Image (cartoon, rainbow over all chains, first blue to last red; front, side, top):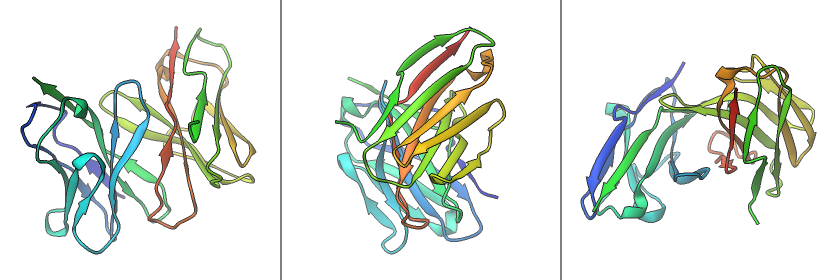
Length: 112
Length: 114
Protein backbone atom coordinates (compact mmCIF):
# COMPACT_ATOMS: atom_id res chain seq x y z
CA UNK A 1 0.00 0.00 0.00
CA UNK A 2 1.07 3.54 -0.44
CA UNK A 3 -0.02 6.86 0.89
CA UNK A 4 0.78 10.47 0.48
CA UNK A 5 0.92 12.90 3.39
CA UNK A 6 0.86 16.63 3.14
CA UNK A 7 1.47 17.77 6.72
CA UNK A 8 0.42 21.36 6.22
CA UNK A 9 -3.27 22.00 5.66
CA UNK A 10 -2.89 25.74 5.20
CA UNK A 11 0.10 28.03 4.67
CA UNK A 12 0.08 31.81 4.54
CA UNK A 13 2.99 33.55 2.88
CA UNK A 14 3.77 37.14 1.97
CA UNK A 15 4.08 38.10 -1.64
CA UNK A 16 7.72 37.91 -2.66
CA UNK A 17 8.62 35.49 0.09
CA UNK A 18 9.73 31.93 -0.51
CA UNK A 19 7.37 28.99 -0.30
CA UNK A 20 7.93 25.36 0.55
CA UNK A 21 5.19 22.72 0.61
CA UNK A 22 5.92 19.39 2.17
CA UNK A 23 5.01 15.99 0.79
CA UNK A 24 5.88 12.61 2.23
CA UNK A 25 5.03 9.31 0.65
CA UNK A 26 5.12 5.70 1.61
CA UNK A 27 5.62 3.33 -1.27
CA UNK A 28 7.58 0.14 -1.61
CA UNK A 29 8.86 0.60 -5.12
CA UNK A 30 10.38 3.45 -7.07
CA UNK A 31 7.85 6.24 -6.84
CA UNK A 32 6.53 8.36 -9.64
CA UNK A 33 5.66 11.68 -8.04
CA UNK A 34 3.59 14.62 -9.12
CA UNK A 35 2.56 18.06 -7.92
CA UNK A 36 -0.72 19.53 -9.12
CA UNK A 37 -2.19 22.97 -8.47
CA UNK A 38 -5.86 23.84 -8.28
CA UNK A 39 -6.71 27.49 -8.59
CA UNK A 40 -10.10 28.62 -7.27
CA UNK A 41 -12.88 27.32 -9.50
CA UNK A 42 -10.46 25.49 -11.74
CA UNK A 43 -9.43 21.92 -12.39
CA UNK A 44 -6.04 20.49 -11.51
CA UNK A 45 -3.02 21.55 -13.48
CA UNK A 46 0.24 19.62 -13.47
CA UNK A 47 3.13 21.64 -12.06
CA UNK A 48 5.88 19.05 -12.33
CA UNK A 49 6.64 15.36 -12.10
CA UNK A 50 9.48 13.10 -11.14
CA UNK A 51 10.14 9.70 -12.69
CA UNK A 52 13.87 9.17 -12.51
CA UNK A 53 17.21 10.90 -12.96
CA UNK A 54 17.98 14.31 -11.53
CA UNK A 55 16.32 14.59 -8.15
CA UNK A 56 15.69 18.32 -8.56
CA UNK A 57 12.81 18.81 -10.95
CA UNK A 58 11.83 22.07 -12.56
CA UNK A 59 8.21 22.80 -13.33
CA UNK A 60 5.99 25.52 -14.65
CA UNK A 61 5.32 28.88 -13.01
CA UNK A 62 8.77 28.94 -11.39
CA UNK A 63 8.20 25.92 -9.16
CA UNK A 64 10.70 23.18 -8.41
CA UNK A 65 10.64 20.06 -6.31
CA UNK A 66 13.32 17.85 -4.85
CA UNK A 67 13.03 14.10 -4.47
CA UNK A 68 14.80 12.75 -1.39
CA UNK A 69 14.58 8.99 -1.23
CA UNK A 70 16.16 8.80 2.23
CA UNK A 71 13.42 11.02 3.63
CA UNK A 72 10.60 9.73 1.40
CA UNK A 73 9.88 13.32 0.53
CA UNK A 74 9.08 15.36 -2.55
CA UNK A 75 8.82 18.96 -1.36
CA UNK A 76 7.71 21.76 -3.63
CA UNK A 77 9.43 25.14 -3.58
CA UNK A 78 9.22 28.56 -5.12
CA UNK A 79 11.77 31.29 -4.38
CA UNK A 80 9.40 34.25 -4.69
CA UNK A 81 5.66 33.89 -4.45
CA UNK A 82 3.23 35.93 -6.53
CA UNK A 83 -0.36 36.70 -5.56
CA UNK A 84 -1.50 34.43 -8.39
CA UNK A 85 0.08 31.46 -6.60
CA UNK A 86 -2.77 31.43 -4.10
CA UNK A 87 -4.32 28.02 -4.69
CA UNK A 88 -4.56 24.49 -3.37
CA UNK A 89 -1.62 22.21 -4.06
CA UNK A 90 -1.76 18.44 -4.27
CA UNK A 91 1.04 15.95 -4.15
CA UNK A 92 0.38 12.56 -5.77
CA UNK A 93 2.15 9.25 -6.29
CA UNK A 94 1.56 6.86 -9.15
CA UNK A 95 1.23 3.22 -8.28
CA UNK A 96 2.56 0.46 -10.48
CA UNK A 97 -1.02 -0.13 -11.66
CA UNK A 98 -0.91 3.41 -13.00
CA UNK A 99 -3.47 4.92 -10.62
CA UNK A 100 -2.73 8.08 -8.71
CA UNK A 101 -3.02 8.48 -4.96
CA UNK A 102 -3.38 12.06 -3.79
CA UNK A 103 -2.51 13.83 -0.60
CA UNK A 104 -5.17 15.86 1.19
CA UNK A 105 -3.84 19.11 -0.23
CA UNK A 106 -2.28 22.29 1.10
CA UNK A 107 -4.05 25.62 0.69
CA UNK A 108 -1.73 28.56 0.10
CA UNK A 109 -2.83 32.09 0.93
CA UNK A 110 -0.71 34.98 -0.31
CA UNK A 111 -0.87 38.24 1.60
CA UNK A 112 0.15 41.56 0.14
CA UNK B 1 -11.12 24.73 -26.64
CA UNK B 2 -10.47 22.76 -23.50
CA UNK B 3 -9.07 19.26 -23.93
CA UNK B 4 -11.22 17.77 -21.15
CA UNK B 5 -14.72 19.13 -20.65
CA UNK B 6 -17.32 18.32 -18.03
CA UNK B 7 -21.02 19.00 -18.03
CA UNK B 8 -22.74 20.35 -16.10
CA UNK B 9 -20.33 22.56 -14.18
CA UNK B 10 -22.75 22.96 -11.32
CA UNK B 11 -25.76 20.87 -10.32
CA UNK B 12 -28.22 20.92 -7.48
CA UNK B 13 -30.40 17.86 -7.03
CA UNK B 14 -32.59 16.23 -4.42
CA UNK B 15 -32.08 13.05 -2.44
CA UNK B 16 -33.19 10.02 -4.41
CA UNK B 17 -32.84 11.56 -7.86
CA UNK B 18 -30.76 9.95 -10.57
CA UNK B 19 -28.24 12.22 -12.19
CA UNK B 20 -25.50 11.89 -14.77
CA UNK B 21 -22.26 13.79 -15.04
CA UNK B 22 -20.60 13.78 -18.42
CA UNK B 23 -16.99 14.01 -19.49
CA UNK B 24 -15.60 14.44 -22.99
CA UNK B 25 -12.00 14.68 -24.14
CA UNK B 26 -10.30 15.63 -27.36
CA UNK B 27 -6.84 14.42 -26.37
CA UNK B 28 -7.28 11.01 -27.95
CA UNK B 29 -6.39 9.27 -24.70
CA UNK B 30 -7.49 5.74 -23.93
CA UNK B 31 -7.62 6.09 -20.16
CA UNK B 32 -10.28 8.01 -18.30
CA UNK B 33 -10.97 8.47 -14.61
CA UNK B 34 -13.60 9.86 -12.27
CA UNK B 35 -12.59 11.36 -8.92
CA UNK B 36 -14.42 13.14 -6.17
CA UNK B 37 -12.84 15.85 -4.07
CA UNK B 38 -13.90 16.55 -0.50
CA UNK B 39 -12.29 19.14 1.77
CA UNK B 40 -9.40 17.66 3.72
CA UNK B 41 -9.50 14.38 1.82
CA UNK B 42 -7.89 15.25 -1.48
CA UNK B 43 -9.08 13.37 -4.55
CA UNK B 44 -10.40 9.84 -4.35
CA UNK B 45 -10.84 7.56 -7.31
CA UNK B 46 -14.40 6.43 -8.07
CA UNK B 47 -14.06 4.53 -11.36
CA UNK B 48 -11.56 4.26 -14.14
CA UNK B 49 -11.47 2.90 -17.66
CA UNK B 50 -8.38 1.90 -19.61
CA UNK B 51 -10.27 1.53 -22.87
CA UNK B 52 -13.84 1.38 -24.14
CA UNK B 53 -14.35 -2.23 -23.06
CA UNK B 54 -12.59 -1.89 -19.72
CA UNK B 55 -14.31 -0.48 -16.60
CA UNK B 56 -12.89 -0.79 -13.10
CA UNK B 57 -13.98 0.22 -9.64
CA UNK B 58 -11.84 2.63 -7.69
CA UNK B 59 -11.63 3.30 -3.96
CA UNK B 60 -15.17 4.59 -3.47
CA UNK B 61 -17.45 3.17 -6.17
CA UNK B 62 -20.50 2.39 -4.00
CA UNK B 63 -23.51 4.43 -5.09
CA UNK B 64 -21.97 5.26 -8.47
CA UNK B 65 -21.95 3.72 -11.93
CA UNK B 66 -20.19 4.65 -15.14
CA UNK B 67 -20.55 4.26 -18.87
CA UNK B 68 -17.78 4.52 -21.46
CA UNK B 69 -19.76 5.38 -24.56
CA UNK B 70 -16.72 5.98 -26.76
CA UNK B 71 -13.03 6.60 -26.42
CA UNK B 72 -13.81 10.28 -25.90
CA UNK B 73 -16.76 10.00 -23.50
CA UNK B 74 -17.01 8.73 -19.94
CA UNK B 75 -20.14 9.36 -17.87
CA UNK B 76 -20.67 9.04 -14.14
CA UNK B 77 -24.14 8.31 -12.75
CA UNK B 78 -25.53 8.58 -9.27
CA UNK B 79 -28.43 6.14 -9.31
CA UNK B 80 -30.10 7.55 -6.21
CA UNK B 81 -28.31 10.63 -4.95
CA UNK B 82 -27.74 11.12 -1.24
CA UNK B 83 -26.45 14.19 0.62
CA UNK B 84 -23.02 12.73 1.36
CA UNK B 85 -22.40 12.60 -2.38
CA UNK B 86 -22.21 16.38 -2.31
CA UNK B 87 -18.72 17.04 -3.61
CA UNK B 88 -16.61 18.34 -6.46
CA UNK B 89 -16.25 15.73 -9.18
CA UNK B 90 -13.34 15.60 -11.61
CA UNK B 91 -12.83 13.68 -14.79
CA UNK B 92 -9.28 12.99 -15.95
CA UNK B 93 -7.59 11.37 -18.93
CA UNK B 94 -4.19 9.91 -19.59
CA UNK B 95 -2.31 8.18 -22.36
CA UNK B 96 -0.78 4.77 -22.13
CA UNK B 97 2.75 5.72 -21.15
CA UNK B 98 3.30 3.36 -18.28
CA UNK B 99 3.61 4.43 -14.70
CA UNK B 100 5.06 7.73 -15.82
CA UNK B 101 1.79 8.82 -17.36
CA UNK B 102 0.37 12.22 -16.66
CA UNK B 103 -3.29 12.72 -15.96
CA UNK B 104 -5.09 15.74 -17.39
CA UNK B 105 -8.09 17.03 -15.49
CA UNK B 106 -11.33 18.64 -16.48
CA UNK B 107 -12.63 21.77 -14.73
CA UNK B 108 -14.86 19.84 -12.34
CA UNK B 109 -18.57 19.54 -11.60
CA UNK B 110 -19.79 20.89 -8.30
CA UNK B 111 -22.70 18.76 -7.09
CA UNK B 112 -25.02 19.61 -4.22
CA UNK B 113 -27.49 16.97 -3.05
CA UNK B 114 -30.26 18.35 -0.85
